[in-house]
Image (cartoon, rainbow, N blue to C red; front, top):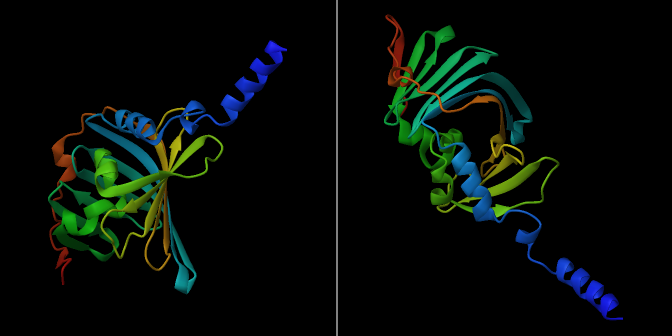
Length: 215
């Protein structure tokens, strides 16, 4: 009889145990994500899908990203048209070879507060700039919802898909106030790369049209 009651008590304890018993807490998960992305630099392949809801338009692109902490990023779009977005953490260059055009601006205006998945250049910014919550898990992934601590027109919510095996951020889904959606799928991560700072500077080609992004 005592054994029977012990089994019942153990079953009840398992049923009402906190979620941390079955998996990681949110803080523990973020600790592992930050540790995985903590190296000096990394590169990866990306697939990007952008949808403007009101116009029912979807564009697809792909290319390569290089990152160096803190704040340096280089996005090289290969398809459908070549384009390079480069930031040294302060300045920003957007080069469109097809138009022979370079746009200049400040990194904070383009990448500030999480825009353009800029937190990939310093994962610690996620906890600093967003309120986090765990969503229902998908097979093989933890899903983390990010809400900006300060209300932003161009960021209503971000969802991160984090691999349960590697703790790498494999997908970033961003919604703005119009419910437009941008999906960035990351593959072929190469971590702990010592990328030269010159990769994150851009030399304007001779004869290119130069525009200021504020204009």
